[in-house]
Length: 258
Image (cartoon, rainbow, N blue to C red; front, side, top):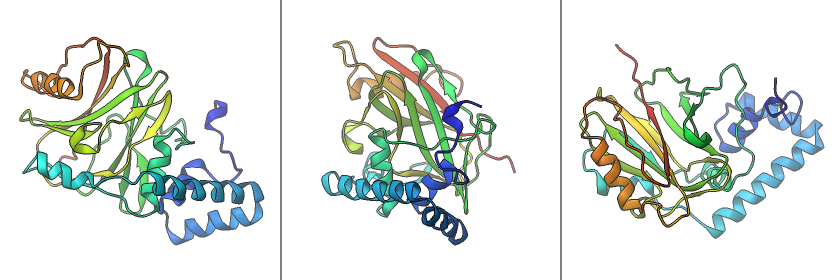
């Protein structure tokens, strides 16, 4: 077991702490965290520091409503919606976007997609009261809420797009119509909002793109056109040609077969 997988507070897993700060725990779980904080002053101080930072960030930089923007760009989306989290979970997402400590899934459940340069993607799924990280071949269900995490040792301008089996492309993050530029510093970012899967049977995938800060880096418009062109090719998920100063990862969203 690597040192990074060890919990910072004995008996209180990092994942439980992050879920608690997101408001995604049962009353029993919340009680266990609060009891642990009562017994561990360091944990109590950590929780207080995170809450204060959340409030400060939200006051400085509130997020726009991504769902409304997506509806404008795609009249009949396959997603049920991209929610705006206006509870403390929104503030947590914003803080995590700045590279603060993030979820650390246990090694036996951690599944990652890596491509050139170390770009890593993770999908955190909320199904009812249960939150888990999607395994690479794990099937999703209608109603699942999915949050996206990206990690990279270099960073850059970050874009996330959805593409379906019909070749339709929907910008999700990093574009003018989805709230503007999104930058990943070296490290991790948990993106704001969540995706809720509908009951449709059409195949869908997410495309994560990082571009460098060089002159050769493609613009948001070029990134979208690049994916739209790749989506016209046969096969799904699409096979995408590399571009200068661009790295990408494709993550299909497999559905349970009924």
